[in-house]
Amino acid sequence: EVQLVESGGGVVRPGGSLRLSCAASGFSFEDYGMSWVRQAPGKGLEWVSGINWNGGSTGYGDSVKGRFTISRDNAKNSLYLQMDSLRAEDTAFYHCARGGYGDYKGSSLDFWGQGTLVTVSS
Amino acid sequence: EIALTQSPGTLSLSPGERATLSCGASQSVSSSYLAWYQQRPGQAPRLLIYGASSRAAGIPDRFSGGGSGTDFTLTISRLEPEDFAVYFCQQYGSSALTFGGGTKVEIK
Image (cartoon, rainbow over the protein chains, first blue to last red):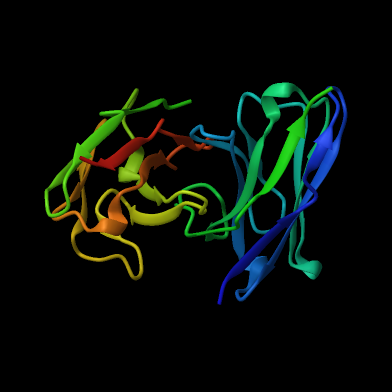
């Protein structure tokens, strides 16, 4: 059974940093592209970032470009999101989701984690 | 970045009725790389349709997707109680993935 479990959320002050993790199991993690998608409470979905199977190709949404960094450790079956220079508008649930074989581009997101809540507030 | 606009924002229907949801793109979505997701309250999104018209594993055949280019639809042929939820379209044909704003299907 495919499972994605996020962790690392919490309350952080504006301008601060946070690192999210996503633990994957039930599939060959090293073969798949992955994405982070966020959802502000009561709002819609926003794609944040994606990464291909070996970390050699990444992409970011305009609102986080230059502030967030996606990475992965295939040996640990883990996906990460380093979030710097956080703003109030970054407050949201952050979900990791599985992309396609090899890359996050060109594929829908077929499995999702439940998400971890990030609150940016002074 | 391709912008997606979903309509209507809210659809009020009764169980057993047919639901038709629309998703319009600001530019053509390559290779029909368009997906639909369902999200129930308190749950993560669930993939329903990919490639504009292919049902994901385990999705009932009352769900169908269609369209190409810039205009796409999701149809639920006969609404079941568990279908009242929010639906999002998503394009994955460009290096920056984008989602529509969502359509809420509520019980009339």
